Image (cartoon, rainbow over all chains, first blue to last red; front, side, top):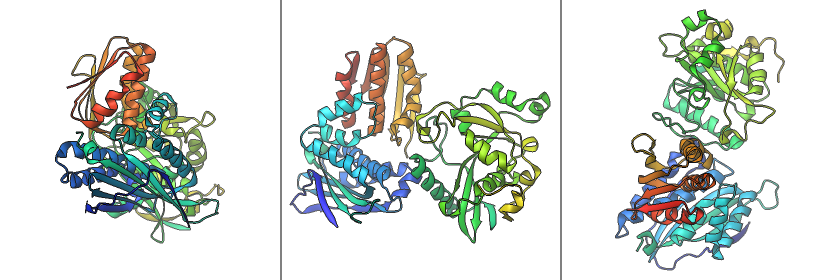
Length: 183
Length: 221
Length: 109
């Protein structure tokens, strides 16, 4: 089993105020796409109590959670494996984490994007994606560019060496409370 | 092999069919599903309203769905009433059937472990039983489907179903992994008592059947 | 519940969008936005998209809005997005589409 990191995968040190987590099979989202949004809305409602400007925080949290969940649902290679979403309100930051099982192709794409984002390339990536005919992959870029999210991933390979290698990927977005409340 | 064929009635049966369909459609075409509600034009891949189950020892082997209203062909096929009527042919047929009354057979899947034994032809045939496709109907509906030409020639035709090609199906991005220039998509129409042979249209459901007994002439594909 | 609506009838030269837009792919938005894209391609008369009552839109939807801007740019049709300043995805992401096309204005109330 090997583990590597991409982007900015750092965890806060302050003890979490609240730390809800939910898991469900990726197939549930394929069967009812609305469940991505419902889950994101639920977490946002739940977490918004930790913030003063609740309506604004709710909107940003559900936006971010939904993007992470949609990606996990789309790129889960084993649809029967669980997608886990966990959130921690820690000091002045909210950490959102989504874990799922995916394949090598997606890991490569994700690593490239996260590393570019960590080098501050969000604005140029956004501009080039918009003008490109290739249309996916805007969600993470928007989180970094418009909400100053710090994004990273932990990538754990389970069955090393085999041709259909799978990876357990945990994508983490840390967003400052001031960004959540748009202050 | 003998199969039990029945319409999904319970919530659990419907969920079994949906998960089986979603698994195949997602893996092969990257499609996801959402609830069908009111007239949302772009809700691609809404769930069918009814499902037919083909079970082997209680295990779901294949399934096919039915739209009772808002058919894909009507919503996305851009077929005019006159084009449907043209496909119906003679005035007599037009008098009996109303092209406004359409139901659509859709989302045929055979689970991977049951492939190679003609179950797709068997299941599509069973889907045209009046006990399924005309369920909860006070008068017969016309049956429609849209799909690749190869579906018509390799599944419909060998099962004995006649079909009328109405017109080419418009090109949508969602089908890019499905259709190709060599195998284009069309909208099709079936007139129940004319195009569906009695062994299918009259097939009693629920029931237990051998594939070979209903597809006697066909070698395994 | 996830519900959305596009109204092309009530306000002249304006598409009024309402609800939550979280379709699964940019391709699904293609079908939904086709009438809007047709309008900006076929007529150069100024056109508006009112997002004021859109609660949320995912990145596939934002991509579809960007595609509409590009279609307007190609056709030379003036385009206006109307929205609310206190809705983060509108004030941040929608407003940021402005540099794509000089004929685009974003009015946030």
